[in-house]
Length: 139
Image (cartoon, rainbow, N blue to C red; front, side):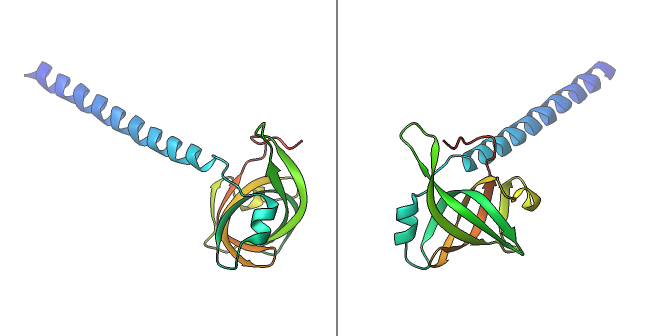
């Protein structure tokens, strides 16, 4: 009887460990999916109407109170990014979700992917920010 209880306990522990690993795997895959760059070019962003949902890749130039000025980066055929010269003002709110990194990581020199709604000319309110410094190469 004692062996049966021990075997049942070991089986339960192994099942719990497998469930935990499965949960961790799902979390990792969902986060890595957020790292897949799908950013639009500076010209596409400039043509987007107010209210349009877009994703941009940018280099943070300055940070203010709940704002960040980005230079939009354009993707090259090799997968690297180049500076476009076009600027964008992000208006970060308390609802903005940081998928990778945290608000203090949004600082000059950081490379970010930001998805949200166009608020006006060269303005955007992101619902999602992904800090990609170190993962993305700018030529």
